[in-house]
Image 1 (cartoon, rainbow, N blue to C red):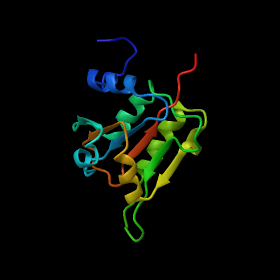
Image 2: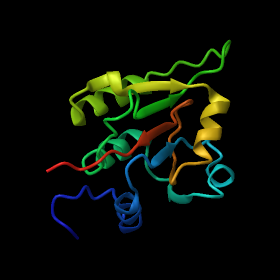
Image 3: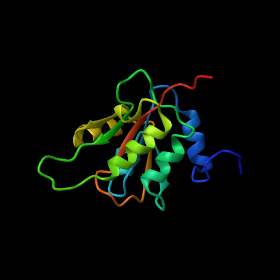
Length: 146
């Protein structure tokens, strides 16, 4: 056990977050995301019993977002004509705002199939049990400034 580290962050996940460098990307995926096939060249960490919001909140306590890009946080766009609602995106924006002074301006969208292509180049993918649809989120790591 460590003090000041959210308990949801496993030793394996903490190691990966620490290994990541500036501009490396991390995908936190929902339960429907093909994490294993997208993550053939990435580290895949299973967190099936958890949802994306609780992991996102814990990760952003230790993970700096990139300040050199407009959108260090990206969501998978809903396909045109798909009637899915995405209230979870508002939750994500609240969490990001809590941890980054730039607020929801840091959050962008990537078309679904482009998101898949970007995910294939991510450093790591966290596979969650999140049941919300289009709940995938990609973070780009920044630098720690003391």
